[in-house]
Length: 138
Image 1 (cartoon, helix red, strand yellow):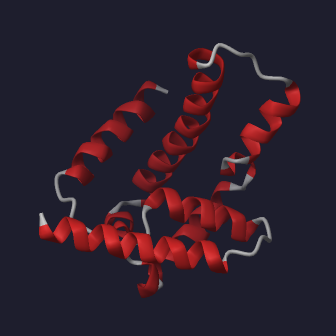
Image 2 (cartoon, helix red, strand yellow; image 1 turned 90 degrees about the vertical axis):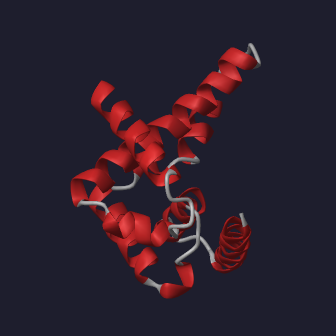
């Protein structure tokens, strides 16, 4: 667990050092092991932060149903090879070059789950391009 956290911190600082690098370029440049490690840490972090906010910051406890809803918001249940392949395919599409990692992960997970993603994908592409244009001006 400690090595995963260190890897996430390293990757976060490494990616922050060149904020103009598109998310797809950054992801594709990582080795399979780096991608896998980052993904595991990211998914674990999603759930841990959500649980902390609900139970710690808000001072409430989670019911079993709430816990299940919370876990379903994360792609924890998706087979990792399936998820990794879908992420690679997603970022190989030039139209998805600037889609941020967090948006991409939700879109890919929803697609694997059989949900409609067209509107979500369009918004993520627009937001990613706006963010890229903003960063270029800085």
